[in-house]
Length: 299
Image 1 (cartoon, rainbow, N blue to C red):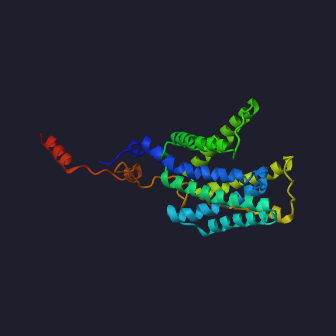
Image 2: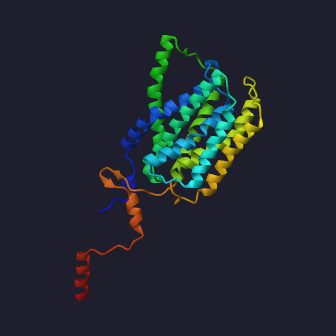
Image 3: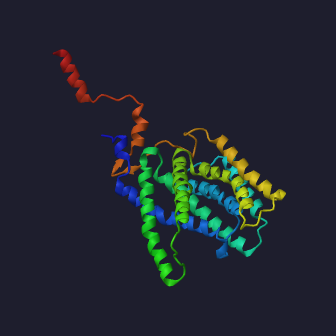
Protein backbone atom coordinates (compact mmCIF):
# COMPACT_ATOMS: atom_id res chain seq x y z
CA UNK A 1 0.00 0.00 0.00
CA UNK A 2 1.45 3.33 -1.05
CA UNK A 3 1.40 6.31 1.38
CA UNK A 4 -0.71 9.36 0.68
CA UNK A 5 0.74 12.88 0.50
CA UNK A 6 0.26 13.61 4.19
CA UNK A 7 2.36 10.59 5.20
CA UNK A 8 5.30 11.88 3.17
CA UNK A 9 5.64 15.12 5.14
CA UNK A 10 8.50 15.48 7.60
CA UNK A 11 7.58 14.80 11.20
CA UNK A 12 8.31 17.60 13.71
CA UNK A 13 11.44 15.89 14.98
CA UNK A 14 12.71 15.57 11.40
CA UNK A 15 12.04 19.26 10.78
CA UNK A 16 13.95 20.06 13.99
CA UNK A 17 16.89 17.91 12.90
CA UNK A 18 16.95 19.58 9.48
CA UNK A 19 16.94 23.02 11.12
CA UNK A 20 19.73 21.95 13.50
CA UNK A 21 21.97 21.02 10.56
CA UNK A 22 21.00 24.20 8.71
CA UNK A 23 21.62 26.56 11.67
CA UNK A 24 25.46 26.74 11.77
CA UNK A 25 25.69 27.20 8.00
CA UNK A 26 23.04 29.92 8.01
CA UNK A 27 24.60 31.67 11.01
CA UNK A 28 28.09 31.64 9.47
CA UNK A 29 26.73 32.99 6.18
CA UNK A 30 24.83 35.80 7.89
CA UNK A 31 27.69 36.72 10.23
CA UNK A 32 30.27 36.93 7.46
CA UNK A 33 27.84 38.99 5.37
CA UNK A 34 27.26 41.50 8.19
CA UNK A 35 30.96 41.59 9.09
CA UNK A 36 31.75 42.50 5.49
CA UNK A 37 29.74 45.70 6.02
CA UNK A 38 31.28 46.64 9.39
CA UNK A 39 33.46 49.66 8.58
CA UNK A 40 34.22 50.28 12.27
CA UNK A 41 35.70 46.77 12.45
CA UNK A 42 38.09 47.61 9.59
CA UNK A 43 36.53 44.78 7.59
CA UNK A 44 33.78 46.70 5.81
CA UNK A 45 33.31 47.28 2.14
CA UNK A 46 30.70 49.42 0.39
CA UNK A 47 27.06 48.36 0.27
CA UNK A 48 27.16 48.27 -3.54
CA UNK A 49 30.30 46.13 -3.64
CA UNK A 50 28.92 43.79 -1.00
CA UNK A 51 25.65 43.37 -2.90
CA UNK A 52 27.25 42.69 -6.26
CA UNK A 53 29.74 40.16 -4.85
CA UNK A 54 26.85 38.46 -3.09
CA UNK A 55 25.27 38.00 -6.51
CA UNK A 56 27.96 35.39 -7.26
CA UNK A 57 25.90 33.12 -5.04
CA UNK A 58 24.22 32.07 -8.29
CA UNK A 59 27.48 30.56 -9.55
CA UNK A 60 28.02 28.55 -6.39
CA UNK A 61 24.37 27.54 -6.41
CA UNK A 62 24.74 26.27 -9.98
CA UNK A 63 27.90 24.28 -9.22
CA UNK A 64 26.48 22.82 -6.01
CA UNK A 65 23.15 22.05 -7.70
CA UNK A 66 24.98 19.97 -10.28
CA UNK A 67 26.94 18.16 -7.56
CA UNK A 68 24.22 17.66 -4.93
CA UNK A 69 20.83 17.54 -6.66
CA UNK A 70 21.76 16.50 -10.18
CA UNK A 71 20.70 19.67 -11.98
CA UNK A 72 21.55 19.77 -15.67
CA UNK A 73 22.79 23.26 -16.48
CA UNK A 74 21.75 24.55 -19.87
CA UNK A 75 24.28 26.55 -21.85
CA UNK A 76 22.21 29.79 -21.83
CA UNK A 77 21.77 29.55 -18.06
CA UNK A 78 25.48 28.91 -17.57
CA UNK A 79 26.32 31.92 -19.75
CA UNK A 80 23.88 34.07 -17.79
CA UNK A 81 25.51 33.04 -14.51
CA UNK A 82 28.99 33.77 -15.86
CA UNK A 83 27.86 37.18 -17.13
CA UNK A 84 26.49 37.89 -13.67
CA UNK A 85 29.86 37.01 -12.15
CA UNK A 86 31.63 39.14 -14.76
CA UNK A 87 29.48 42.04 -13.70
CA UNK A 88 30.56 41.50 -10.10
CA UNK A 89 34.22 41.56 -11.15
CA UNK A 90 33.72 44.78 -13.10
CA UNK A 91 32.08 46.49 -10.15
CA UNK A 92 34.60 45.40 -7.52
CA UNK A 93 37.71 45.71 -9.66
CA UNK A 94 38.42 49.25 -8.46
CA UNK A 95 38.44 48.43 -4.72
CA UNK A 96 42.08 48.68 -3.61
CA UNK A 97 41.98 49.53 0.08
CA UNK A 98 42.73 46.89 2.69
CA UNK A 99 39.27 47.28 4.20
CA UNK A 100 37.62 46.66 0.85
CA UNK A 101 39.73 43.57 0.15
CA UNK A 102 38.83 42.02 3.50
CA UNK A 103 35.19 43.00 3.16
CA UNK A 104 35.02 41.66 -0.39
CA UNK A 105 36.54 38.37 0.79
CA UNK A 106 33.95 38.05 3.56
CA UNK A 107 31.20 38.83 1.05
CA UNK A 108 32.48 36.08 -1.23
CA UNK A 109 32.65 33.57 1.64
CA UNK A 110 29.09 34.49 2.55
CA UNK A 111 28.00 33.98 -1.06
CA UNK A 112 29.40 30.44 -1.09
CA UNK A 113 27.62 29.55 2.14
CA UNK A 114 24.32 31.04 1.01
CA UNK A 115 24.63 29.07 -2.24
CA UNK A 116 25.15 25.90 -0.23
CA UNK A 117 22.17 26.70 2.01
CA UNK A 118 19.88 27.26 -0.97
CA UNK A 119 20.88 23.98 -2.62
CA UNK A 120 20.50 22.01 0.62
CA UNK A 121 17.05 23.51 1.12
CA UNK A 122 16.04 22.40 -2.38
CA UNK A 123 17.48 18.94 -1.72
CA UNK A 124 15.61 18.53 1.56
CA UNK A 125 12.41 20.18 0.34
CA UNK A 126 11.93 19.21 -3.33
CA UNK A 127 8.20 19.99 -3.27
CA UNK A 128 5.81 22.15 -1.27
CA UNK A 129 4.46 19.42 1.00
CA UNK A 130 7.84 18.01 2.00
CA UNK A 131 8.65 20.56 4.71
CA UNK A 132 6.53 22.73 7.00
CA UNK A 133 8.23 26.06 6.27
CA UNK A 134 6.89 28.05 9.27
CA UNK A 135 7.89 25.22 11.61
CA UNK A 136 11.31 25.02 9.96
CA UNK A 137 12.00 28.72 10.45
CA UNK A 138 10.64 28.52 13.99
CA UNK A 139 13.17 25.82 14.86
CA UNK A 140 15.83 27.79 12.99
CA UNK A 141 15.19 30.83 15.18
CA UNK A 142 15.16 28.71 18.34
CA UNK A 143 18.49 27.07 17.54
CA UNK A 144 20.02 30.42 16.59
CA UNK A 145 19.01 31.77 19.99
CA UNK A 146 20.35 28.75 21.86
CA UNK A 147 23.65 28.97 19.97
CA UNK A 148 24.12 32.73 19.85
CA UNK A 149 23.25 33.72 23.43
CA UNK A 150 26.09 31.73 25.09
CA UNK A 151 28.55 33.07 22.51
CA UNK A 152 27.47 36.68 23.12
CA UNK A 153 27.68 36.24 26.89
CA UNK A 154 31.16 34.77 26.58
CA UNK A 155 32.28 37.69 24.39
CA UNK A 156 30.85 40.13 26.93
CA UNK A 157 32.55 38.45 29.89
CA UNK A 158 35.92 38.41 28.13
CA UNK A 159 35.59 42.04 27.06
CA UNK A 160 35.79 41.17 23.38
CA UNK A 161 32.32 42.55 22.75
CA UNK A 162 30.41 44.76 25.17
CA UNK A 163 26.67 44.26 25.46
CA UNK A 164 24.94 47.58 26.14
CA UNK A 165 21.27 48.12 27.07
CA UNK A 166 19.08 48.87 24.07
CA UNK A 167 16.96 51.99 23.85
CA UNK A 168 13.32 51.93 22.78
CA UNK A 169 14.36 53.35 19.41
CA UNK A 170 16.83 50.51 18.85
CA UNK A 171 14.28 47.91 19.92
CA UNK A 172 11.81 49.36 17.43
CA UNK A 173 14.40 49.45 14.64
CA UNK A 174 15.51 45.87 15.35
CA UNK A 175 11.91 44.65 15.40
CA UNK A 176 11.07 46.27 12.07
CA UNK A 177 14.30 45.11 10.45
CA UNK A 178 13.92 41.61 11.86
CA UNK A 179 10.33 41.29 10.68
CA UNK A 180 10.73 42.61 7.14
CA UNK A 181 14.47 42.40 6.48
CA UNK A 182 14.99 38.95 7.97
CA UNK A 183 11.87 36.87 8.61
CA UNK A 184 9.71 37.92 5.66
CA UNK A 185 12.58 38.08 3.16
CA UNK A 186 13.94 34.68 4.22
CA UNK A 187 10.54 32.99 4.07
CA UNK A 188 9.92 34.39 0.58
CA UNK A 189 13.46 33.35 -0.43
CA UNK A 190 12.89 29.79 0.78
CA UNK A 191 9.45 29.60 -0.80
CA UNK A 192 10.84 30.76 -4.14
CA UNK A 193 13.57 28.10 -4.03
CA UNK A 194 10.99 25.36 -3.52
CA UNK A 195 8.86 26.64 -6.41
CA UNK A 196 11.72 27.33 -8.85
CA UNK A 197 15.43 26.60 -8.41
CA UNK A 198 18.39 27.86 -6.34
CA UNK A 199 20.05 29.40 -9.40
CA UNK A 200 17.00 31.39 -10.48
CA UNK A 201 16.32 32.71 -6.98
CA UNK A 202 19.91 33.69 -6.27
CA UNK A 203 20.25 35.55 -9.54
CA UNK A 204 16.93 37.20 -8.76
CA UNK A 205 18.38 38.77 -5.62
CA UNK A 206 20.61 40.86 -7.89
CA UNK A 207 17.68 43.20 -8.39
CA UNK A 208 18.75 44.83 -5.12
CA UNK A 209 21.83 46.28 -6.84
CA UNK A 210 20.20 49.54 -8.02
CA UNK A 211 18.95 50.07 -4.47
CA UNK A 212 22.46 49.48 -3.12
CA UNK A 213 23.75 52.30 -5.33
CA UNK A 214 21.10 54.57 -3.89
CA UNK A 215 21.92 53.44 -0.33
CA UNK A 216 25.59 54.34 -0.78
CA UNK A 217 24.65 57.79 -2.06
CA UNK A 218 22.25 58.46 0.81
CA UNK A 219 24.48 57.08 3.58
CA UNK A 220 26.28 60.07 5.17
CA UNK A 221 28.93 57.78 6.71
CA UNK A 222 29.93 56.14 3.42
CA UNK A 223 31.94 57.49 0.53
CA UNK A 224 29.64 57.86 -2.49
CA UNK A 225 30.65 55.42 -5.24
CA UNK A 226 32.25 56.79 -8.36
CA UNK A 227 29.89 55.72 -11.13
CA UNK A 228 32.47 55.09 -13.82
CA UNK A 229 31.55 53.27 -17.02
CA UNK A 230 33.07 50.03 -15.72
CA UNK A 231 30.93 50.19 -12.58
CA UNK A 232 27.71 50.84 -14.49
CA UNK A 233 28.52 48.15 -17.06
CA UNK A 234 29.09 45.60 -14.31
CA UNK A 235 25.75 46.36 -12.71
CA UNK A 236 24.05 46.12 -16.11
CA UNK A 237 25.58 42.66 -16.64
CA UNK A 238 24.21 41.40 -13.34
CA UNK A 239 20.74 42.78 -13.96
CA UNK A 240 20.74 41.55 -17.56
CA UNK A 241 21.63 38.03 -16.48
CA UNK A 242 18.64 38.00 -14.14
CA UNK A 243 16.34 38.95 -17.02
CA UNK A 244 17.79 36.16 -19.19
CA UNK A 245 17.41 33.48 -16.52
CA UNK A 246 13.86 34.61 -15.84
CA UNK A 247 13.01 34.22 -19.53
CA UNK A 248 14.68 30.80 -19.58
CA UNK A 249 12.61 29.61 -16.64
CA UNK A 250 9.95 27.59 -18.45
CA UNK A 251 7.50 26.75 -15.68
CA UNK A 252 7.89 24.24 -12.87
CA UNK A 253 9.00 21.42 -15.18
CA UNK A 254 12.14 23.25 -16.23
CA UNK A 255 15.34 21.35 -15.51
CA UNK A 256 16.80 22.28 -12.17
CA UNK A 257 13.77 24.32 -11.17
CA UNK A 258 11.17 21.68 -10.42
CA UNK A 259 8.64 22.54 -7.85
CA UNK A 260 7.41 19.00 -8.56
CA UNK A 261 7.62 15.99 -6.32
CA UNK A 262 10.69 13.78 -6.45
CA UNK A 263 11.07 10.33 -4.89
CA UNK A 264 12.51 10.32 -1.39
CA UNK A 265 12.27 8.06 1.63
CA UNK A 266 10.51 9.23 4.77
CA UNK A 267 10.01 6.95 7.79
CA UNK A 268 10.95 3.91 5.72
CA UNK A 269 8.29 4.48 3.07
CA UNK A 270 8.40 6.04 -0.34
CA UNK A 271 7.29 9.64 -0.57
CA UNK A 272 4.09 10.96 -2.09
CA UNK A 273 6.00 12.02 -5.17
CA UNK A 274 5.94 8.45 -6.42
CA UNK A 275 2.26 8.26 -5.59
CA UNK A 276 1.59 11.43 -7.58
CA UNK A 277 3.51 10.12 -10.56
CA UNK A 278 1.25 7.07 -10.70
CA UNK A 279 -1.97 8.78 -9.78
CA UNK A 280 -2.89 9.47 -13.40
CA UNK A 281 -2.47 5.84 -14.51
CA UNK A 282 -5.58 3.59 -14.44
CA UNK A 283 -5.84 1.51 -11.26
CA UNK A 284 -5.85 -2.22 -11.88
CA UNK A 285 -8.48 -4.22 -10.04
CA UNK A 286 -7.13 -6.81 -7.66
CA UNK A 287 -7.76 -10.41 -8.89
CA UNK A 288 -9.63 -11.36 -5.73
CA UNK A 289 -11.94 -8.39 -6.14
CA UNK A 290 -12.59 -9.36 -9.74
CA UNK A 291 -13.54 -12.88 -8.68
CA UNK A 292 -15.93 -11.57 -6.08
CA UNK A 293 -17.61 -9.37 -8.67
CA UNK A 294 -18.11 -12.36 -10.99
CA UNK A 295 -19.69 -14.39 -8.17
CA UNK A 296 -22.06 -11.53 -7.42
CA UNK A 297 -23.12 -11.42 -11.07
CA UNK A 298 -23.80 -15.19 -11.12
CA UNK A 299 -25.94 -14.85 -8.00
